[in-house]
Length: 299
Image 1 (tube, helix red, strand yellow):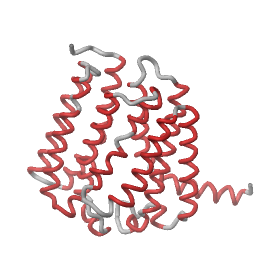
Image 2: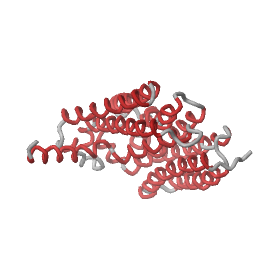
Image 3: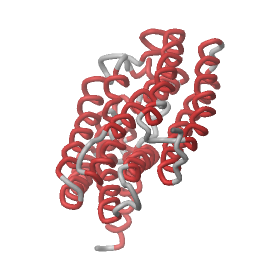
Image 4: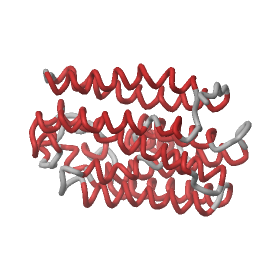
């Protein structure tokens, strides 16, 4: 390969990298990895964990690239996303699709060969749910897009659990419910302080269709639901004192910010709620991990 061709290839690769949404994929992989660890009674089986982690990351990145490809016209009309190479035309649709399909196929092959068919099929379903059902059908047509489509985003810990145990347990479903209830308030906080962007792009996000007050009330209600669901690991005797000690302040701040946002809205507070929600999920799952390996039983 000539030096010029190598330079062009490297430039294209660097341009495509943001389309895979690496920060989002990192959170997805983290949640999947927590599922793998919680599914293991002792040390994780690294012969499964490593290919499962890479496979899930590749399929998640492929789904993100397809999302950017489909929404490149919408992204170009939004300040938050107008910089994306797919929106600016820096990378072509054909090359983006080719890389996405190659990454997705490689990830699926890893999961099928090194883990099990259940994980591969669930991951494929998650890809279709996000890249096709959410992106093409839900997001442009209903303000409940993130509620219905959130099922795909809640799958990573289930995928991780299935990769290790070849099955889905009650705790895996609880992890799914936690992320499923977390997704609407997380995303609606972003949509609130970016509502002009979404209105300009013609997307029916909840703050655009139902207004600020309705959205903040919805955030409060979903936050209460989320706080209740996070108690289920304790009810299942799958978590102990360490988890509870972390859970109480996490849920306390979550509810305080949600209620504050509803009582006296500001864009800066909505942004704080959005950022906090990311840390909330990270610390909550980290608490489950620590509790799993250093359990102090509640009863």
